[in-house]
Image 1: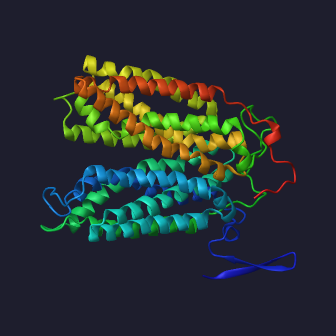
Image 2: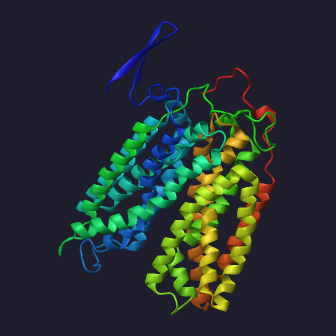
Image 3: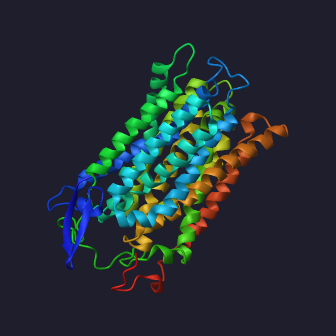
Length: 465
């Protein structure tokens, strides 16, 4: 790796290719080149939403055409995704402050190594038929890559777009929602290409995906840039009187954890995600069971694809809307509109309206995605831009918690209902009402949000790292 040497205060200081000092943009740099760098990473790690395409093939690694006793069960394979999401939250919480120090290039490159390497380790696990190796590969190593890759562009984009922070983060995080739309058909195509009468082609597919994702994420790391400290958009002047819920001060990441605002936002994100992710994981089965005989497996698959599209588009639409109406108002819409739609869903089954059912969940999932894309700008408004990456990393533990709560609520309530004689078409009614109740709690937390007390602000000249 080549280095350059600069001198500060009479001391030589080396700067490697991955260091922040090497990626400070030159005057006149086009800031619109930064969102594509973020998309290179987010479109790759968004593959996580498509990992389920490997579940059935991995239950037939030995039996090939059908599962045999030596094959893995779906319940065992389901833990791969759960472990990855858990380590997404853990890694983002642990590395957020470090990321702010080292800059996005080094973080994005390490994310590429972890995520791509996770696939290669998992390929070895499939080849040796050792499930614990896949847990370690895609679950732990890949999960770390997910977390670091997810938060690495956030602060950079907010810094480049102080005039439209919601739109900027929405552009990147939209990629995470849409990554599955690329990964799903690509994975199926690769497995079909590598399969033989005695082989299902999963190991080779993992290896190819690992190398492809590493290359594309590395391209993002190469082209990303950070603005110089005195840079601002041409013609843009910071408002003399900022809005009440938008601060011009900074709060250190450790100090943010001492404020009630952090925990209110943690609950806001957790409850919004819990309501959405629980339904997202059961969308196919739910549509078929609520409309028996009217929604075929193929139509259900199309419904899931439609939800992925709204998940992606909602991230950009709602985050951009938040720049106009404010973050608290945007989340208020999420909770109020979501409450109405969840209560309405059981009635769509009673009146037999598939179209209304699809419309309800399309809007719900758009707000699920919008919640992810809007929260970084919300944090910037409340805690300032200086430590927003680190604070965002800590807050994403709410996603890990929701990834457990949501599916558990949906699955276990449904199972309880069916066990007690409730028809499958009505087994989701209680679940929808529980989700609506969670949104009421989220609404209250959001309405309680106030500006951070000045005692938590970083004092002028104070240099905390």
